[in-house]
Each structure stands twice: as structure tokens, then as C-alpha cells.
Length: 481
Image 1 (cartoon, one colour):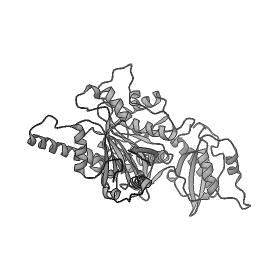
Image 2 (cartoon, one colour; image 1 turned 90 degrees about the horizontal axis):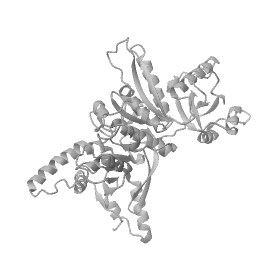
Image 3 (tube, helix red, strand yellow; image 1 turned 60 degrees about the vertical axis):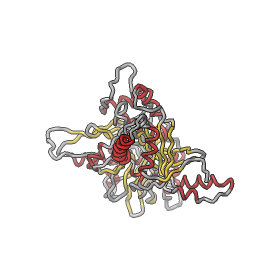
Image 4 (cartoon, one colour; image 1 turned 135 degrees about the vertical axis):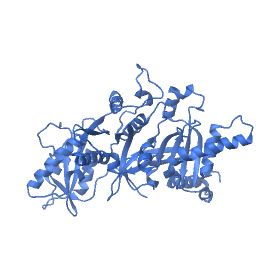
């Protein structure tokens, strides 16, 4: 049946053959034995350096659509800045591969119903779409991977909650909209791990919060010489790029010694959790490597869901190199066994933020702890550690809508005065929101004003204590195995 696109049954060999047909690696060779050896070596590299990174997409794949040419903004920039001057990059267009869990037979078995045929194919493709990747047209599988966009709805490698934005992909006459978080892999020449994570960070903040979209050329200063391959960036260099391009971000350092390392680790974990719940990505600067945190797994053993653009970090912790994996807090914020008690160490990270938010997560947690201490002193003991609460920055309109359906009324049937004030006054664009479970089915809901400076002695919880059912407000997308 003609469906307007070429759908192929998936196998590793078929994908490899499609890629090699574009690269023309054996062009000019007439010796069939030499061609066989060249392709055998290339296939081994394909399996080790490319396929091992995307098994979360290919493991459930039954069919795929291969596009030999697709215009990608990131590659077009990189090509013009560097690869146009090389002999091994085929063009300024990437290859794009779409993965599906349906088979070619599933498509062929759709009964032709006149004008409805395309509609039925559209439904099948959309319901089985696993995501897509783009591949740079270079004869080196180590730097070929460019972008990965998994479809979180059908992502079965992990269970948890991740940041996402809606993406629409057009495949021939069909269009598919799905929730994803775009992954970008370094090319090792113009972009290293730091630049790759900056691209992922700024792209997400642009798509969700309409902040500036950072171009690759924006990371380089035209007034100074840039050595190639790029030697990489320090943490200060990452911040300089973000600030120079007017992208709001928080540079945070948490210092620790052997005496307080475990307590400080829990503070670092609580701060990163607040960023995650607020749907704000976190760049972690980890032992001269950079990764980005985009979510967390489910209880009881909650871990962080992380993108690793090169796979180097995962190789050291998991002995494999997927593009995404779950890691523990000890892996994200490691504590060395032989710490010198007289030497101060640090964990460093950069979190996304919003304009006119002046109380960042670590500062907000201090105010929250003070508020809970007051609540405890009033004879309402809360056993839960403040670092275990769900804390998030949320748009005031979304919060108002949520609270309208979840806040308990008082005995007379009316809402608490604090909620009425919240509903009828002008508010900052974003508010801090915390859920504190005080009974099996009851939460205390605290709302903080983030426009106060951290030096204030005023009460930032200006709406008092509200109470509601245990039904968490979430900005994240659920993924399940």
C-alpha cells in the first residue's frame, strides 16, 4: 500500500546500510574484498560508537523511516564554522531516522478506506512513534550522533518524571506531536561537553519559557582567537556565555569538608530536586566533565535522570554509554574516602531560573526551614525533614487553578482568608510552592514570594497556611517502563 513514505523493517544491519549509502565510504574502490573489509570495520564502529548510545530507542523498534537529507540548525552552524573546510563532511544537511514500534506489516494490513487511509496510517504511526535521531554526514561514528528526541510517552528504559516540551515532527504527509527533551551530542571540535550542555539548557528554556535561543556561534567571541579543537570550558566560562547572551541562570557552589560532607550533600540534593520539580534543568560540573539533570526516578529509591552528551560520565559509573541514564545522589555528588579535614571541597552546578525571581532554591529552603520551625513551636510537629518536601517555582495562574480544586474550605464552607487574598490580588509571575504532608491525607500548602531578596527579615509566606489533599502539583512528564 502506498503511504507516501518509505517505511523499512528495522534491523541494525538495515540502519547501517542506510547510513553508509549516504556516506559512500567505499566510493572508488573496485576490489570487492577491500570493500568487504572496510564495511566490516565500519559496522563494528557503528555498533560500538553509535548504536550503544541509542539502545533505549532501538530495543523496541520494529520499523524505521530514513531521511538522507534534513536541515538542522545546529549542524548547519557547525558545518559553516568548521566542517566546510574539511574533506570528510559530506554536506551541510544531516540524516534523520524515525523509530516506530509497529511493523511494516501493521501498516500494510490497514484496510484501504478511500480518503481515510492516510488518517489511519497517521494514527498508527503516531501511536507507535518512539522518537528520532539526527546524524552528521561524517565518516566517523564517534562524532556522528547529533540530536536525539525520545518520545517520553513510549520511553520504556526508565520510570520516573522528566522535563519535556511538545515537539512536532513532519514525516512525508504525516505530522506527529510528542513530548520530549532534545539531547545534543558534542562533535569534539567546535562543541565539547560544556557547549553541548549549554545548547540543551538554552534550547529547553527557549521552548518552555521563551527565553533566548542560544546559537552555537553565540558561544564564541568574534574579537578573540578560538583554538580548535576547543579545549573545553571552565564553570566560569559556561556562566560567562550564559550571562553574555542574557540567559538567566544561577551559578551555585556548595562547599564541604570531611566534617559536614554528608549533610552538605543532602543540601545539594535538595537544591537540585527543587530545580527539577520547578522544571528547570541543572548543569552539573563534575570532575572536568559536564552533564545535565532533567528529571528523577520514582520512589522509594529516587535517583536523578541525566543526559550525558559524550557518555564519558556514564561509562565511569555504569560501564556503558547511553545518552540518558539514572544515577544516584552519591554518583552525582561524590564524597571521596580520604578527604583532608583541613581542605574545603565543593560541588558546582548551574540551574535555570526566571527573571525577577530573587530567592533561589538554596535561599528559599532557608526561609522554609525557619517557617517550619515556627509551625513546630506552635504545637504542630512536622517530622519530615524540610529537604524532603516538594518545592517548586510555579506560574501563578497555574497555581491558582490548581489550588481552586485542592484547597480545603473552612468549617463554614468558605475559603481561608489567605486563599481569598491569593485569588484576588496581583501576584509575581512565579511563586514558590511547597507541600508538607502533616497527616495521611492532608498537606499544608505554603506559598512564598520569590521577589524578596535573601537578606529580608520579612515573612515571605504572605498567604498564611493553606491545607489540601495529598495530590501533588507536578510540572513534569511521567515515563514508565
